[in-house]
Amino acid sequence: MKLEFVLQTKGEGVETILPSTPVTTLIEQLTDMKIGAMVVSSDGKTVEGIVSERDVVKHIRRDGTGILDGPVSKIMTPTVQCAPLNASTADMMDLMTHSRIRHVPVLDEDDMMVGIVSIGDVVKTHLAELEDERDALVQYVTVGG
Image (cartoon, rainbow, N blue to C red; front, top):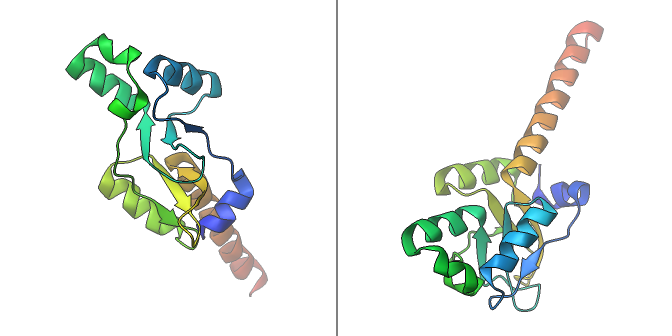
């Protein structure tokens, strides 16, 4: 299934955060919104980085709690794996597994962000595909195709 369909189902909203936002504000927003990552963007459409709960923990462990008062830009991952709207969920499973990432921004043909998919979105979609396939096979066997 293509990401375009996944985004139509889940919605195309993307939570973004400014690079200058303090890490403490990031933590509050992640907690309040019950999400695991935010795209770092100055304009809400271009991807400058991504920052996750894991980034916060990694930097606290490495640099101490002083990073909490610093800007998100200091702890974000600046090189972001993105995907086009026509990528498939199979492509995403491969990318997420091999890159060990859980969130992938989705870009349109002009490289503007139109959504984000998480590993949960991909797994949910894949399970639905498997259920549809199973139902079709049961229908074929019981009715005779």
